[in-house]
Structures are given as structure tokens and as C-alpha cells.
Amino acid sequence: MGQGAALLLSRLLLLLAASRTLLAVSFPEDIVPLDVVDAHFTRRYPVFRGRPSVNDSQHRLDFQLMTKIQDTLFIAGRDQVYLVSLRESYRNEIISYRKLTWRSGQGDREMCAVKGKHRDECHNFIKVLVPRNDDLVFICGTNGFNPMCRYYRLDNLEFDGEEINGLARCPFDSKQTNVALFAEGKLYSATVADFQASDSVIYRSMGDGSALRTIKYDSKWLKEPHFLHAAEFGNYVYFFYREIAVEHSNLGKVVYSRVARICKNDVGGSQRVLEKHWTSFVKARLNCSVPGESFFYFDVLQSITDIIDVNGVPSVVGVFTTQMNSIPGSAVCAFSMTDIEKVFMGRFKEQKTPDSVWTPFPEEKLPKPRPGSCAGHGQAASFKSSVEFPDDTLQFIKSHPLMDTAVPSIGDEPWFTKTRVR
Image 1 (cartoon, one colour):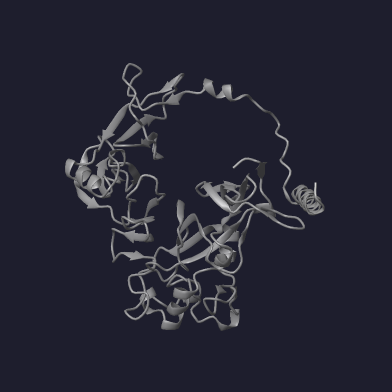
Image 2 (tube, rainbow, N blue to C red):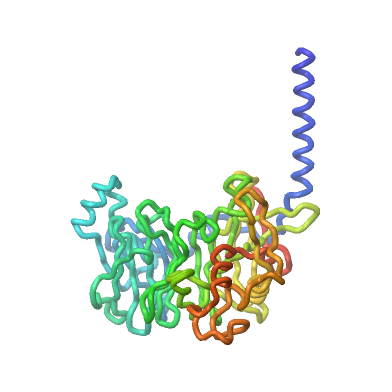
């Protein structure tokens, strides 16, 4: 071996040793489990195959979502919604007692093929299934890349009324993530609003008043989001998702987990600023990390619960993983709604020029009422409607939706971590 090759080898060995030392210091240690069972243990649990009885043949399920309404579990897939009674007990296989079938029409399937999609993509994948009230359930499907929605009666699953355009309420593609819920008679949805999936949107429609949405093609508001959950709490609707972090665009496509908040009484801005757009949209990072000399972050939210009680505190619990270009790792973190609210009452983050770093916006320079406030409440108590907000408040929230501080997890660390697994 030549002298140059030997020198190169020694440097590589030093780098390898240093990287192992760094991993040993920064990578979290897993909690020792109380018990471990073999994977075969799960075979004792009943399974769902989409069959109305054990004598029927199995159909392709293509599971999309699952929703509990009263004492029934609704399981949505391709062209079908299966109803499973939660009053029954099942031994080997979970059997549905009723099935709703909604297929794409022939014309929609043909047009889907013309658009260049494979025939397996041109089915009606059910992506929205939310109760409107005690009598009706609202269901939307991709319908061969032409999303449509319908109301069905809960008592007999009969189609009620006319079909409704699913644009901005339901995605075009079964692989696209989305969320939806009704709050005070209005539908809140988060999805993509175009065939190319370039227009990500948080949208409110139906009910009284005009529709509202996030600003189109504004990366400060949304940048390639993957929506995971929506929840109503107090005066607000919250959206939990992950997206490309615009505040770290100089580092490439870094993914951050987010929580966004909008006021339920938001009716949009004036004719001059934010007309038919949210005036209360604010968002913050969710910080799921292991503390230490150098924090180890689990940045990518995969799933999150509804708002639940954790030791008497309304909270959400989420599953997080590391970045795709990082060492595999997974964690479970919890966040209290109180901590989320504290962050939304804190400082905003700003970028003065497209090339400058993001910095905290001085609190004393904030316009009044405070941007992101709900009309008739708090600092905006004297305003009857968001339409009345002054232009400087609306202009600020239009360009500054991001909060400076991240939401800390309960206890400032994960409840559970698993290394080498994503």
C-alpha cells in the first residue's frame, strides 16, 4: 500500500471512529420493555377482510380510513364502505353487517384513463367519511380523479339529495393525505385542490357564509403538507400535519411537524386584504426530541390522536420518526393544548428578505388587535367580525403565519423511543 493510500485509510478510520462516538452520545437509548411477545401472538386477534360472511369471496379492500359513529365502525376502502357492529364479539374474522357500494361512473373511469392514469387508480376510493348530524353522514371519494361527495342516511345508508363537487374537500388520488370534520355545521377540510396536487388547501365550506381557504401557492402558509388530523377545541379548529420547513429552505427539504389553528368565527378579511381567505391562520412546529448536549429530533409526524385527557389535561399524542436521510428512529410524544395555546400567544417568526435568516418579530411592534385573534374575543373583543380588522393586522398575518417558538412535548421528552426503526 502506498503512503498516500495509507494516509487516506487512516483518515477514514478516524472519521468512522468519530461518527460512532457521536452516535453513542447523541442517539437516545430505548426504554427496556416490560414484556416482549412474538409476532405470532397477534394471530389470536380477529381480522377484517371485507367480507359480509365467512362464506363469501374476499374482495380487494384498499383500506383508506376508519371512523366510529355511535356503536358502529365504518371501514372505507375502494368503492365500498363496510359497517361493523361494535356490540358484537368476533373470534377469527370480523364480519360487516352492512355494505355501502359507490363506484365511479363509466364516464369518469374513461376520462381518468384519458388523463393517463392506470385503470386500478380510476376507482372511487373513499377518503372522507364524517357525520353531519345524528341522521346524515358525509362521504367523499376520488371518483376516478374527479372527486365527488354525497350525503347518506345513517339508518339505512340510502343516498340523500344530490352529488356535491368534492373539489377542496376530497383529494384526487387515493395516496394523497387529507382530513375533514364538521364543526358548528360547517365542513373543514385539508387536502389538495387540483389534479396536479400543487394547490394544498385548508378549506371551509357548506353551512352559512362564504367559503374560506388558505392563500394559494404561498409556501409561507403551506409547503407540500401531509395532513394527518383535524380537531375542534374551544373557539378553534386545529390541523396537525407535516410539511417542508420553509424556515430551513437553505438546508434542502427538511420536514417539520406542525399544528395550525383557525378561528371558527373567521369570515375572512376585507375587500382590500385577505378577502375569502383566513384571517386567523397561525402555525407552529411540534418539538418531539430527546434533550441533551445536542438534541435528537423526531421531526416527522406519522399519526396523532384526537384530543384526549392526559392526567386531567386536554392533550394529543403522536407518533414521530426521524428524517428520511437520518438514522432510523421512532418516538411517541404528547402535547398539551395549554402549551399549544401558549405558543400561539407568543412571538411570531419573520424573514425580512428572501435570502435572510428567520428571526423573532419584536413583540412591541405587533399591530393591534393581535394577528391571529378571533373577532369578539380577547384582544379583538371590540371587533364584531374579522372583516372589520384593520389592514395592518391583516397584512401582518398574511405574511407572518409562523410562530417563533416550537410547542414542547409534555415532560420535554418522548414517552417512548425505538431506535433503528422508522
